[in-house]
Length: 261
Image (cartoon, rainbow, N blue to C red; front, top):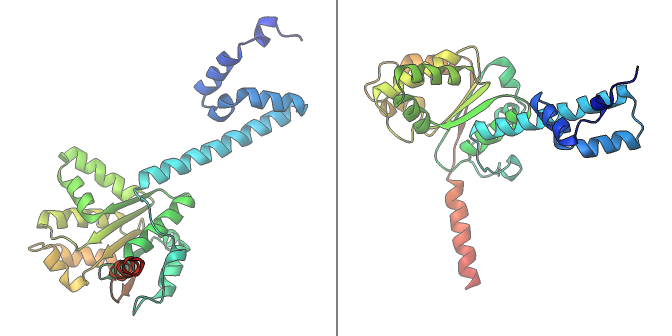
C-alpha cells in the first residue's frame, strides 16, 4: 500500500525535532548524515533500525559517563602511573592495587587510607573513584569539611534528602577527615552517613590522624566509638608512612630553578 505523499515529505528539520522530542538525540543531531549513509549503503529497514539503536545506545552511554564524571566531584588528578611507590617508607601496595580492581565495591567493603600529608592518599582515592565511574558506578567525592558543612546548613528536610543521597550513591569518598576539628554535631552527621551505608554500600575515607586521635578531631562527641566500629567492621585499612612527596617536589623545583640561573 502506498503512503500518502504528505506522509513521506516531512521537512528534515521537523523530523529531527520529532526525533529529539521522543529522546532519539543521536540520530536527530546527525539526521542528514544518517540518512545519507542509509541511502548510500542501501540499508534494509532492519539494518536501519539496528544502526539507529547502536547509535543511540552509544550516545546514551557517553552522556551517562559524562554526567557521572561531572557529578562525582573528582577534579584534575595525577594517574596512578605517576605514583612513586618507592617514595613512602611504608605502603601496602597490594591493598591499593586490589582496591583499584574495584573488588571492594561488589563486596560492599570500606577502604581507609591513613597517613601524613603529602603521601598520595587523595591521589589514590581519586584514581579509584575515577575507575569506578568508568566502570558504570555512581560516585561522590567530597572533602570531609565540605560534606559536613553541606549537611549542617540544610533544613531538616534538606538534610534528610542529602543523607539519602549520600547513603545510596554507589561509592562515596570522604577525603581529609582529621585535617580540621569539628564539633559533636558534625560527628553525629558523619556517623549518620556511615551508618546508613553500613553493610550496604562501600566507602572510602582518607585521614591524616590515627583512629585513637579521632576524639581530638571530634571533641566531646559520644558517637566516635560506634562510628569507628561501623566504619572498620568491613574495611581494608592501609597506613602510608614517609615524608611529604609534595615537599620533595617543591624542593626539586626550587633546585631546578637555581640551576637555571
